[in-house]
Length: 291
Image 1 (tube, rainbow, N blue to C red):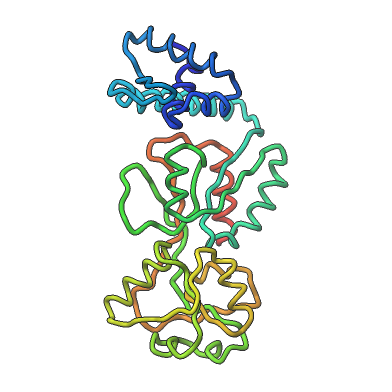
Image 2 (cartoon, rainbow, N blue to C red):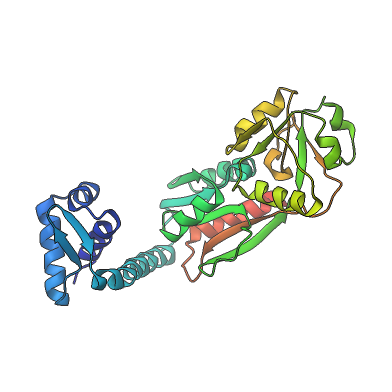
C-alpha cells in the first residue's frame, strides 16, 4: 500500500467521480482506476461500487476513509516536524481569518514576511463556520476567529483578547460623542447589520431576544469591510466587534450600555494536530502586536 494510493482514494471518495478526481490529481483516469483497483486487491475488498459512469463508496470504503485520511495527515505532520527540526524556514503557512478580524493582521503579516521571506503566506477570509470546515479538511493550519458559540470536540481554542460588540459610527455622527449608547437610541438611526449566522449577529440576536428588543436594519451583509464602507458615509451605523475597526481612525466604536455583548477573539486549531514552527512564530508575533 502506497501513500499515493491513499491520496487517490481520498480524492475519489470526496468527488465520487473518477474523471474529476483524476483531473484534480493531474493524472489520467486510467492511472487512477488502476491504482484504486490495486488498493482494493491488496485490501481484498471493494471500496467503490461502480454503476455505469457513477461510483459510490461501499460500506467498506466509508469505514476505511477516516483511517486513510489520518494516515496522510500523520505523515504530513511527521514530515513537517522533521523540517522544523532542521530549522528549514521555507514552505507555506495557511491561515484562516474571519472578515471582522482582518484588520489586526496587517502589522503581523508585514513583520512575519520580513523575518521569513521564504515562507509563503496563504490567507483565506471566510465565515467562522466555513473556516472550521477548512480546518477539519486540513486546508488551513489555524484559524483566527471569534470563539464559536457551540462546542466542537475536534477543535481546540485559545482566547487572544476580549472585544465586545459596539456601535460603529462615523466620528462626526451624532452618536459618536456618547460614552455609552442604548439599544433604544440605536433604533432611531439607519442601521446596517452583519447577516444572520455570523458570530457577531448571533450574539446580538441572543441579547435582543433576551431583552425583548427588535432592531430593523435597512441592509444586511456577510462582509464586514462593505459594512464599514457604508458606515464611513456617515449615513448608516452598525454593530460589530470593536476589534473590527482596529487601526482605522475614520471610524469610532461606542460601547453599548446593555450587558451580554462580550466576544472572545481566539485561535482555533485541530485537536491533537502538530503545529508547525512557522505557525507558532506567526502567533507569537500576533500576540506581541496586541500587547
